[in-house]
Length: 634
Image 1 (cartoon, rainbow, N blue to C red):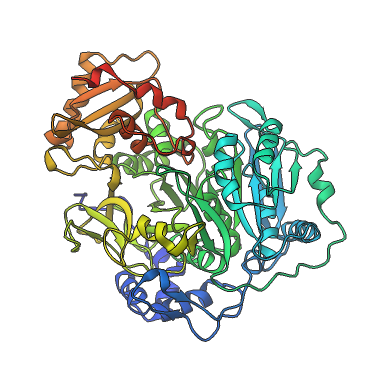
Image 2 (image 1 turned 90 degrees about the vertical axis):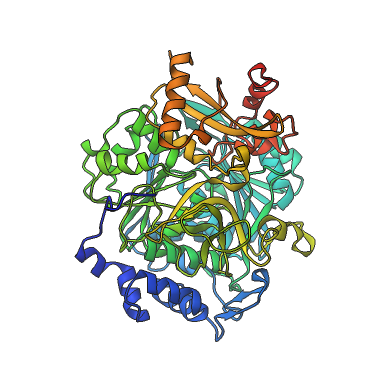
């Protein structure tokens, strides 16, 4: 399944000095495997120790965990009192907190003390507008320091935050914000992407007209000039006084990718979400005070929330807004050198793009870089090899898999475990993650459903507008009672790790043989003529046949020679079952708002089924290209 020798092995000093090594010693566990077993078996003890070790501020209370066979009904820290902003802003001194770089070269830098003062002034202004516990505040915002301050100010009052990036069209935003009924919306006058300036005034006006709950709009100017935002802040604000909250009280509303009707509004708690992030950051990624953490993301994606969470470990977060490949693919690596990233996160698709352009980031000084993170889709074995050959040989590569559903990961990296090519090293601490076969029994060495068999703190508190948790249960617990099914198709490896093969609900099934789409995508990574692709199953002649759609590089032609080369690569490196029955060239490939290939939407169109929510797509017009294709009629 994977190679026997690791691509990377932590050295003895790193294993001894890592935060997780210190945590293992405190827990009395000899290695990661033992620590993970203990974290699942002794739920209350693990999360109590994680709270104290990771520095969550607040009163823990006497009870850490109340078990229930139904995970939705389990409760963590029911008597706790805290406000997560006190952890985000602890030790607010002159150390850097946020560095921002815009695509157009604009820069901003705030210390922890400056960030806290910004939050104080915004919180006072929000309170004056009547914003309080349980109210909702929205952001139609880019990835900028003001966005972070607005979220923290909202949270300090016990209100709930939700955001969309300004490149999202009004329909997309209204589908989301109209369901959560925000009282106030933060926004920006415009943004830059791909060397072009885009104005937001018309979209903002339409959103406000269609979301009647919005009583006030607060906008800043992207270029830093004087704006209504500056007038809104209260310069006379006193010291920050955070509203005490319960561990389970809401902080974020996130949205599903929208493949089944309007996006689901997923409510997440403040305490549970932050505690899980602290464990992932400090124990799985070794994020420490003073580290410089970067993740390429927008405010549409849960990785924005994850990135901002690094402030709670007293790290500096690096924000970038714009096209990560403008003016060329080297942009982020130049930033990694100049900003001295210690942690760099990107999508698997981005890594593939760097590889396809034969770019070698190692020409930069990446001596500070310790961890590279990848998510969004499964990272191919070739992607793993490319990072170690052409980025940096001595780095922890953490391919992670989780999602908006839990604002965290189910499986990911670990600083004291080796990295094997194509393999995610471990399940997250505190989560009983495994793979199940069709009969609901664990499987090893063969593909199955990725599941979590226990409750954990960052499970959603609820879906909004979901009486009796009916949609919540249907989304995750319908297939196996009381077991969370994530919807990923994966297999366990001999090393105790995981290989994620693709979405299980988009899994191909020709002749009754289950095939993960990632198994086909990985065979295309070395074919330079292909810049993007999507593979789906088409119902045909009483069976399912595999159809591969490819987007070609400029000047490339899908002639018979290229078709045969694609099929040969797939047959040789996967199996004859994986070889597409049809390969069709397309001008565009549909993607979701978070950048994932919209496999389900394409599958629906190809099979003449209605696409249940176009607003979940970044480029819905691309779907029309897949309608009534003559190539698929025979």
